[in-house]
Image (tube, rainbow, N blue to C red):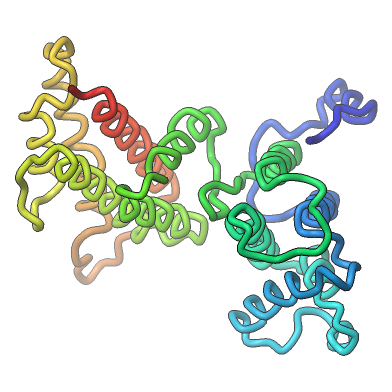
Length: 307
């Protein structure tokens, strides 16, 4: 984990610590710190015994980018795949490409190392949990608005909302029965990160509908496969998913749910736009993501305490 060394404390005193997130660049010190974390969790990229791991990462990236190598052909002649991958991460001017390396590498750490699907000869210095924790702490430290969650790099707009709504919602959706909703919600974040805001709205609504259908399946509540969000919300309320002692608040809560996510999606992202192109603003997509997270969290936690 990051250590609060003297120079950091002095920067805070001088007001040099970023208090808002930026998304367009990954500072070079952060890139180098990420390489250190990868070395601790995957094994040093200079160690010949770890080259198979970096070769797999290298091959995926090259195939997706349509290249034969990432940086220098000479590195591969000597089997130095780790050198090519890490040099690419440190030097690429394309922020999305840098995040591709981070996401893919930490997916290997998070999934394959955690499940012992990769045979490694040198024991990693840190656990997957510690590696992910430090990565996310470093992002925050540099004021870069991304976090690694549930196998993906996702964009963060407000740390408070992320910590109290998005992250808990992703945790609840990680259960197997919510697999479909989880994939749709993560895809909404992926669209948002790449500024595909209409697609973001569509997948937010899909995630909400899938969550409610899963709850209905688990509780044995009847619904039609083509039921809209409004009908599914009605089924949840009619079956008293929300505690009865909140009855006086039910009408306003139901109105907020029914007129929130589905309405934004239908007006801005769900139908043909006609002759005039509809532009979905970034702030609307951000609001949609946060509202979806909060609503999913409400519904799943209500079901968990439902009797």
